[in-house]
Length: 196
Image (tube, rainbow, N blue to C red):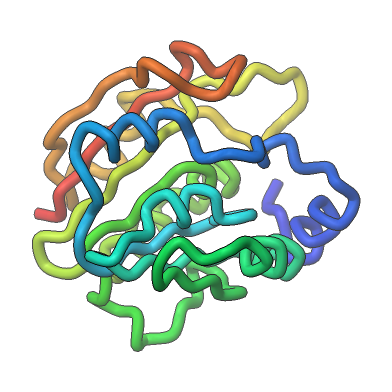
């Protein structure tokens, strides 16, 4: 079932936000510790309260977090700035044309698993449109959410990821994160994908 902007806003206002963990994803912390800050223009779709945005933000880059929920954007803006990060109330699928080919990196953590699986092809197309030539997507994919009801979050298999991203991206590297949020151990896959 496709979630609407109103439904995401209602979830935030009602405090029904199990995806908000109150901290940066531990695997992102590890990645930045091992590799140093990323340079260039970075987009974080579905940024929520902006923990990952602030972790990514550094003097060497410019990070933009977008979210459908005004509550989430307002909360993200309430935190002290790390560097020059920005937050925008926006839909990944309807971003203004000025964002086309703007980004060196798209960092994916919670957006892909939140959208209806029927929109995943549109997601890939949107990311391709936003990246510069040679740009990269760094993604933490949630493979198998453990819940009885229908998502979100929606799981995905490695085979599905290969099919969705394979024609547009080259897989540079993938690994299971050593550290993650409690309850997600061995259930996530990190991929670095380079635009072909």
